[in-house]
Image (cartoon, rainbow, N blue to C red):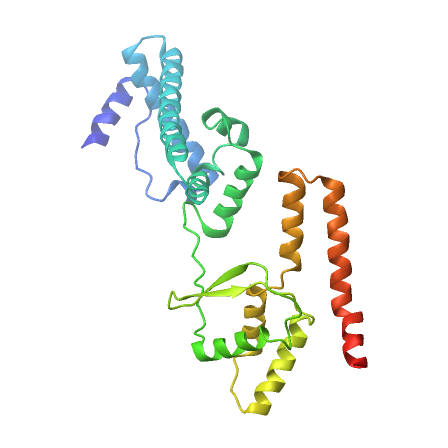
Length: 278
């Protein structure tokens, strides 16, 4: 048996033989048992090395340990080189974050920068957070977003209402495209309104109640209004663009925006008062 051969060798070197092998896991053994087997292993190793290099067992052992550490560093360097190459070849940050999470808790930030020079501290911390929250190299579960079906006749009814003279107080300027779940596109004009979205929805719901029409939900009506926004903001963007890119200048743009704001206040205030007086 191998142990008998080992004991014959140890006895020849005036070392007590190994009478029994360790049967329990090393982590579960007592401190006394660990010390015993550590001493016995040191005796056996030094005896073997002294046969290979008489009188130089300690030197040979140190060289063996250094060689093992160098091999470990070589393997670690090869792995880091592969991971850094994967990181640099990834086209999206989500993929790079997953790759970083593989090594974020194994290598500190400064050492990791040797392999990925353009790595920022922020991205390194995000990768560590990804590791703690989702696990190493785990993909973040995508959030499924569902679209609510809107009946075309209900949408047409509401669009007709908000583009009527009861709501619109000026000519349209430009247009937006409203895309339905059926991939149908509807062109919606940008208009100037005299009511805020909440008041328009309340007025529309009251109108539907009077005519016996079943409208869309309140939240859906507000979403439609957010897409079909009034054009004062669009006009202000046009003014800024004319001032910055077409040579009108900042003073001109400032003056035009003041006029626009005055017109907006007039439509929402004095204009209504004049209608009531008439």
